[in-house]
Length: 326
Image 1 (cartoon, rainbow, N blue to C red):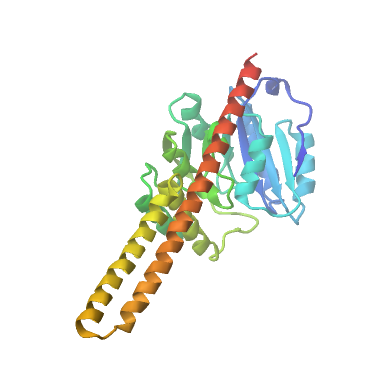
Image 2: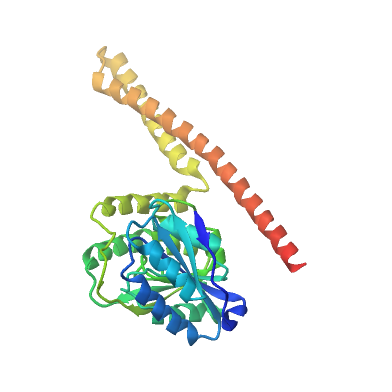
């Protein structure tokens, strides 16, 4: 990962940066000049200091050249470069590590959302009325059917107060610090933040047709998204206590095997005839029950290690904060 710093800051940027706009960009050379020009107009009208961190996610077009020129032209622009494509989740993580603001904004470079709406996303957080604000698409959306199914499934599995999970959003920096580093889990940032007690609000944002470039979304992402959704659900439901899931299932199967064995022995003693399919159930249930229970015990050990890691990170953050205050 390579970071290109800002140009010499303008007087308005001598204030501490409050808002960092994180912009993942893959082959967006046609859209970036206008996007950054609109960002410049938006930032000029704000009372708090902004920066725009563009993450070049392994572009193969003229995006690096465009960004090099943008750094010279716009003092608020910073660039993070991935040598190969690593996906939006990794791009947001790299942007977060490079960003200076205590409020982060996820915003794509494709001009389907205009920078003029960024202050509206940030306003409730700046006013301490919310920890995260997500947009609700207003306008024609090519993937509306797929997105609708995805959002309905998400609302069924998770108790969240928003209608559109995978959209532009603003959030406190601490939320990103608490996010698991997993590919594609940026779609569930709202779910994970809400589960951790952060307040979430939704506002409408206008959606415009893409005028250049092409969408990076394909139908192949649908099964991946569904599996990720189930993984997040399992993480929230059983991540702290995996033995509840695997152990209960293992005990249930083992008990079924024992019960079937007792029934088979009763039939054998009463009639002198064994029932082969019952013995198959017994063997399968006992083996699977033992495997699931062992997996639960192993999962508990992993959960203990994760808890210790979170505690160490919390103590490190507290130590860093105390040193900063001193």
